[in-house]
Length: 198
Image (cartoon, rainbow, N blue to C red; front, side, top):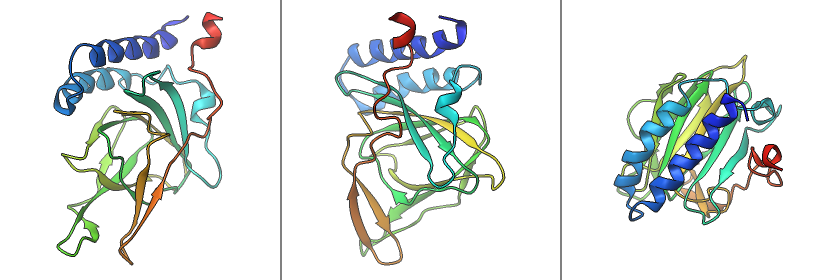
């Protein structure tokens, strides 16, 4: 494997050692995973082009690696021009790393009536920057491509198999909540280096 593929394999190896080294404590795992994510998105030379292709209508969530015990997953998010998510949560901790382009995230919180409302100002991520979400630190947000004329790509690490987890979409205007399971855009694809080892 070349050095670009080794970057991803090195990341997954380090994350596997981290989750195996102690309890599944959110604070411990975030502290250990943050520098690993920082190093991964510091260089934009390792993500295969197939994992960075936009869809004209929908943002794409490509599985890069799924831990066999569902302790963590790594995905690339590919944003076409102007694309955005609904307001949603994750129910597990996550670290978002910006790889190329830009991404804007608006945090939400629940008000006294239990409805989700914006919390603070929208934050813009540029390549190399990270954002953390978790049930204890703040888990509800809306994310969008910062650009209306180009693709953006971010890399997300989650403390579970995010494509299988039952989560929630929130409709701020009505207070409605809907369950969803996101799946993956490349649901039948193997982990990236499996072909190289075959």
